[in-house]
Image (cartoon, rainbow, N blue to C red; front, side):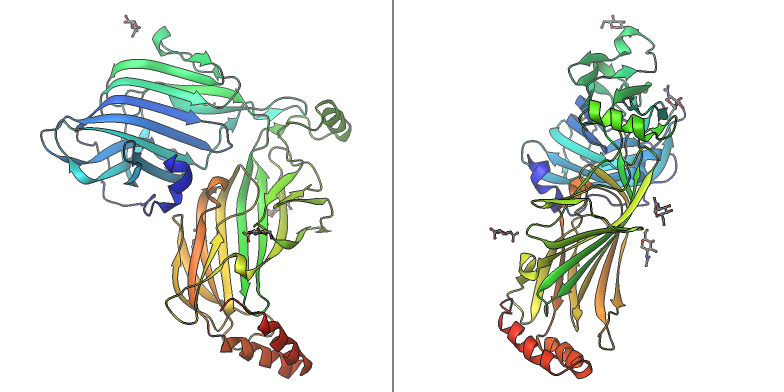
Length: 470
Ligand SMILES: *[C@@H]1O[C@H](CO)[C@@H](O)[C@H](O)[C@H]1NC(C)=O
Ligand SMILES: *[C@@H]1O[C@H](CO)[C@@H](O)[C@H](O)[C@H]1NC(C)=O
Ligand SMILES: *[C@@H]1O[C@H](CO)[C@@H](O)[C@H](O)[C@H]1NC(C)=O
Ligand SMILES: *[C@@H]1O[C@H](CO)[C@@H](O)[C@H](O)[C@H]1NC(C)=O
Ligand SMILES: *[C@@H]1O[C@H](CO)[C@@H](O)[C@H](O)[C@H]1NC(C)=O
């Protein structure tokens, strides 16, 4: 599927533009011939899939289709993409923060799908839109016993949230074993139907614009909700040592239900024995993904080196010093090393210029990231030529970083700040193009040998013979 493979190619996925004034209502240019929404809850973040067949009912060509989104969850959008179903090609999307208040008081902002060329009156389009939210359900109840199964609650609209009339509409909620509708429906037609691993509203016919009927739905989730509140990821590039060194500092919190009666080690051991360590809304082991073929992995936390670490191919299984239950936090540092060739490409056209492509994230699967700071620290003497990020970032800066033995001007440090990412997007690659003259290598070596001992120079020349990057 296009979305799974090429989502990172969408150049403009999330653009905030202040073009819409307060209380904006889109022109009624479209009719939803078919509106099919599926809310996926398999992961600890939320994904909304929309399959739409729309018809331009205006008397003139139209270029924009509007999708209302409750304003309170707009900041949690991690990615918003749309594509034509027939052509497997993307359509430009953006979020506009203008606010419109619905009759029931709900405030909505708009996602806008912007067609490249105007759609003629009467023309029909089949498209697919996908919104990833860095958002999970809220624990309901908020506190549970140590041996209870956690339930989360989600608020959904039983009808399409659309400024246009929908001829046929269904809303599906998928990805949990059970669903309970906590808010009673006004009539039988409105209440949801429980199917296998799915909860379904509709099909409805001729649904008016902005029809709302909010329902709280609860569903069991027997795993922890891992949120990285802060990640500081540094990648040091060294042509001299031939390495890319990764160091990451995580502040993790489990956003799951809190313990009602506190922690009891005996009860905990009983539980683990009974369930053979399966399930539970606590973090017992963190499976951190690392880059392929990495070496020298280590984990430390406030207390010191974490020894309960196991390597499993490209994963590092880390057992925190205590099971991290709902509301609890754990902070740690993880690091590893790769050879430079795993990421470096010669730029080909220009002499002494290199292109390095690095994953935006590694870390645990099924995770929400609130604030992420990714830094690439280039070798001393390197100049940044160009950068590319697969994901929209809050800002990016270039600064200088000084390490031991540095010459006066230090290393160029590029930092990208992101917010509300999800682990699924981690494989997208940050690309940095830089110029680096290999004479800079000698500069550093000379500097070190001058201050340490002459013998190092010999070692360096030997090491340099293996420098097959150039
Ligand atoms: C429920 O659906 C039936 C059949 O589609 C329809 O006749 C009835 O009017 C609907 N009731 C309400 C309250 O919408
Ligand atoms: C859903 O639950 C929240 C929190 O308990 C509550 O404030 C809200 O009124 C509920 N909404 C509906 C439609 O029942
Ligand atoms: C993790 O770090 C944050 C921020 O420094 C701090 O507030 C929190 O108490 C730390 N948590 C633990 C479990 O050490
Ligand atoms: C990792 O090492 C294996 C075996 O040496 C090699 O086949 C593979 O291409 C390497 N992967 C990367 C990403 O360099
Ligand atoms: C970049 O964004 C981050 C997070 O929003 C913020 O903490 C930081 O101060 C910003 N830096 C600059 C230079 O704007």
